[in-house]
Image (cartoon, rainbow, N blue to C red; front, side, top):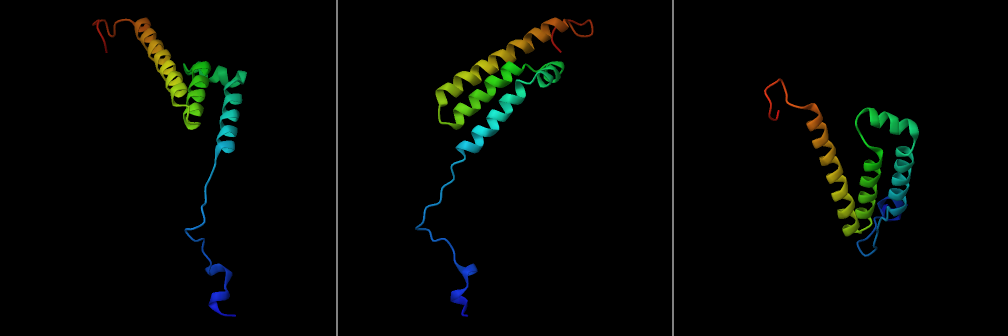
Length: 106
């Protein structure tokens, strides 16, 4: 058998187009993550860390939309997520009050 007959020496030529479409796999990962974030035990654990599962779900929707090429929808979702997180941070800072009795910001 000559080396030209060896199957291991064959390569895919540049004339053949190879493409990957991870759409189903990505959708499956997002579906699993959404299911996880809707689980009561997970929601409770996240809440104890100050993480709002509803905001996280919206962030997932935004990323899903972005990966699907729906950039306007993604931008809207991400803007809402950023606004909600920023608002909650401001509320938390206001609730802490002045630091070390010196007033002002830390």
